[in-house]
Image (cartoon, rainbow, N blue to C red; front, side):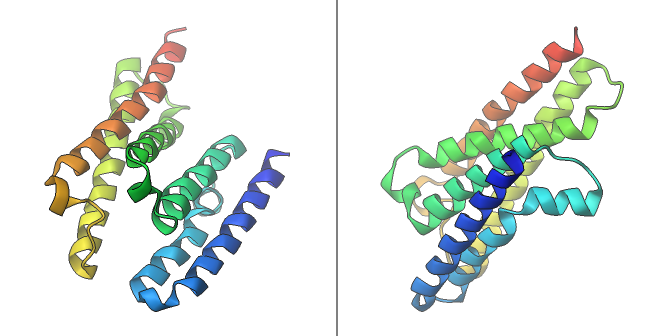
Length: 182
C-alpha cells in the first residue's frame, strides 16, 4: 500500500515539475535544470536501493518524497522560502531527521558501542548538511544566485540551517541510543 502511495506521489511531483519547467522556460537554463532535478531527487531512495542493494523502507521513501516536494517544489518553485518565515528551518530540520536515519541505516546491523553509534549518526548528519551548504555556495557562485542568503544574513542562515539539521538528527540518535541500551 505504502509503495503504491509513493508512486502516486512521485507521479504528481513529476507532473508538477514538468509543468513548472514549461511555465518557467523564460527564466533560463539554471531554473529549468533546478526544476527538472526534482524528478531525479524524488526517486532517490529507489535509485539508492538499486545501486547499493540496500533496502530503505517505503516509510522512509514516503518521508523523502514529501520532503523533496516541500523543499524543492513548494520551497523553490512556489517560493515558500520567501513567503513563509521559518519555512527553510522546517525543511532543514526534516533533512536532519532523514540524514540521521540514513546514518542509522549504515550502522544498524553492526555491533557498536551505543555512544559511538550516536556520534556516527550526528557526524553523518553534519557531513550531509555541510555538503548541502557547500553545494548551495558553489551554485550561488557559479550561477549568480543567493540560496544561502549571504547578502542578507552573512553566514547566519547557513549556520542555522546546519544547527536545525543537527537538532533533527538528535531525534534519530536518541532513538538509536535508547534501543541500543535495551
